Amino acid sequence: MKTFRTIREALAYTVNTLIAAGHTYIINVRGPSEIASNEAAAIQFVAQHMVYNDGKLGLTMNLPFDPASGEFAHLVQFVGAGVEQHFDEYYVNGIPSYALRLLTDIDLAKNVALFILSRVHGYKPSTQFECEVHDEGPLPSETQVTVDRVEMGIRTPRCEALAIDRPEVKEPSKSNSHSPAPSA
Image 1 (cartoon, rainbow, N blue to C red):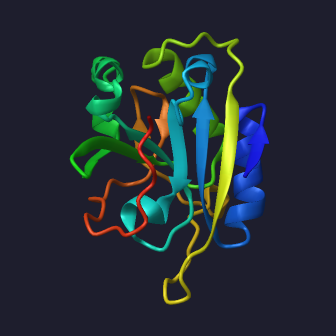
Image 2: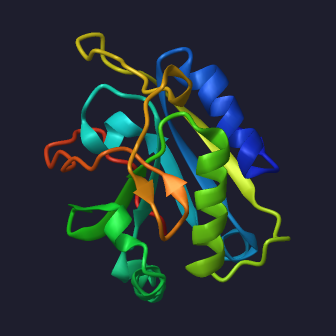
């Protein structure tokens, strides 16, 4: 595990080192509240394959809202922010979760993270976050690894509510054997 002081540094390391090496990963972003209560994360980024089972390693924001761990209030805030329609909804062991594919666009991923941390978790823009990057190793050799790259000319529909670009929506695989850990 590597720890970073900024979201952008963690994302850049992930894109430039782990994705470049064909590795899957989990990035846990923790604010002061999560650190004080020893919770896993406010938000997560995971390799796209870990949610969609599609062989792609791009950055995917993963937002599990486990009611058993007090996440119901954050789910209400998330829905109230009016952005849930831009995410893919799926369930892991009955836990409502939302995913947003962000390709390898570091600045886009950082901006979406800051928006969610502000609107859903109530953090101010000046908040310092701790970012833990876990290298989960390479995909199994039988899985074809691909990386969608913005710089290769892939364009996406406009996400007006967040003023961001995002990929086409595809139903997440329910049979995914690589499930990211729900936040505590």
